[in-house]
Amino acid sequence: MGKTKRNLIYQTLYQMLTLVLPFVTAPYISRVLGSENTGIYSYTYTTVNYFMLAALLGIETYGTRTISRVRNNQEELNKAFSSLFYCHVFVAGLCLIVYMVYALFFSGVYRVYAIIQALYILAELLNINWFFFGIEEFKITVTRNLVIKVLTIASIFLFVKDKNDLIVYITIMALGTFISQSFVWIFLRKYIKFVKASLSEIFSHLKPMSVLFISVIATSIYRMVSKSMLGAMGELSSLGCFEYADKIIRMPLSIITAIGLVMLSKTSNMYVNNNKGAVSLVGKSMEAVLIFASAIAFGLCGIADNFAVLFFGSEYAYTGNLIEAMSISLIFMSWNNVLRTQYLMPKCKDKEYVIAVWAGAVVNVLSNLIFIRLWGATGAALTTSLSYFVVSLVQAYYVKKELPVLEYLKKSAVPFAAGIVMLLCVKCIGYALDCSWISLFLQVLAGGIIYMTIVLIYLKKTNSYIYAGLVEPFIKKIRTGK
Image (cartoon, rainbow, N blue to C red; front, side, top):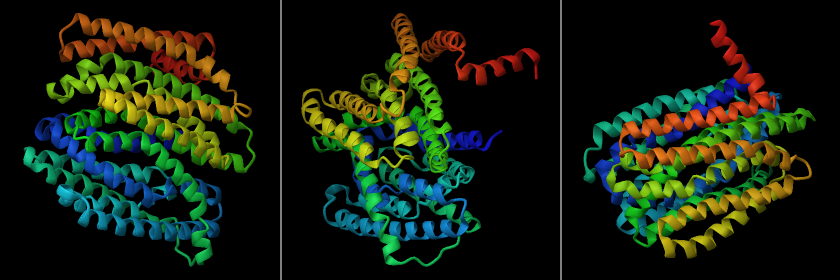
C-alpha cells in the first residue's frame, strides 16, 4: 500500500475519531443531561471556541504547508518548526490570559464551566498536529487519539449519571482534549530538534498566519454565530437540537477533511517541485468526494426524521428538521474543501480563499439576523447551507481559469440525480412504515442499493478511474476468491 493511501486511511480515522465521541455518547448524553443542559454546554463551548481559534491563529493550515515544503531538509525543518512553535506559544499564551479574564469576571452564571474549559486553550497551546501532518506521519496522531477517545467515552458512561452531572461532563471533555494534545509530544524528539530562533524569524510567521486566521474566523462564523445567537436569545432547547444536528452533518465531513489534509501536504510538495500531476489529482479527488457527499447528504435528508427520534429521543424530534435543512451544505462544504486544500492553499492563493470565506461569513451573519428571528433554529440551519453555497460560487470563480470547474459540475450531475432518486424512495419507505429501528434499517438498505446501482452503472459507462482503479479490481477479487 502506498504512503498516500496509508495516510488517507490514518487521517480519515483521525478525523472520524474527533467526532465519534459525541456520536457514540450522544444517545446517552441527550437523555441523561436533557436538551437544556446540552444547550448550555454548546453555548459555553462555543464561547471558549472563539479563543481556541485565536490561539491557533491559522497554524494548522500554515504550519502543515510550511513544514511540508522543508521536510526533506533536516536543518530547515528544525528551524521552521522551532520558530513556528515559539510564535504559536506567544499567541496562545496571550489568548489564555484574555480568556481567564473573561472566565473570572464576565462569564456570569457559567463561571465554573468557563474556568474548567480553559483546558481547551491549554490544549491548543500544546497542539503540534500540524507538524506531523506536514511530514506525513499521520499514524501517530491516530493511535494517540484512539486511546484517549476510548478512555473519554468510558469516563462519560462511568461518571455522568443525571442532569446534575453537567460539570462532570464538561470536565471530562476538556481534560480529554488536553491529554490528547499533550501525549503526542512524546514522539516529537524522534523527528525534530529545537534550535534558537530570532525574534524576526519568530514573528515573520504572524502575517501569513493572520491571513489564514481571518479565513478560519470566517469559516467558524458559520457554526458559532448561529449557536451564540440562539443561546443569547434563551433558545437553549432549540440550541441543544441544533448542536446535535450540526454534529451529525459534520461526521461524514470528517472523511472529506481527512482527504483534504493529506492532499494539502502532498500537493504542496508537488507544486513546489512543479509536478504537473497535481491538477489531475484535484479532478480525481473532486469526483470521488462529490460522489460520497451526494450519497450522505441525500441519505441523511431521507432518514432524518426517524433517525433523530430513535437515536436522540423524542425530545429531539426537532433535530430531524434541522438535519434536513443542513444536509445540502455537505455537498457545498465538500466542494469547498477540495478547492481549498488541493489548490488554493498549496498554491498560496490565500487572498482568494479569504475573500471567498468572508463572502460566506457576511451572508451568514446577515441571514442569521433575519432568519433566526423568523424561524429560530431552522433559520440558522438554512443560513448554514446558504453560506457554504456562496463560498462555493466565489471559490469556483477564482479557480475557473486554472481548473476545469464545468467538468467537475458535469461529473457531479449523475451522483446528484441519483441522490434525489434515493431521497424520494427513502422518504416513501419512511412514510409507509412506523418509526422503528427496522424501518430505519430498511430505509438505509434500500437507499444504499439504489444509489450505488445508479452510480456504478454511470462509472462503468464513463470508464471512470474510480471504477477502473477501485471497483473493478474489487469485483475481480470477489470472483476469484483472492
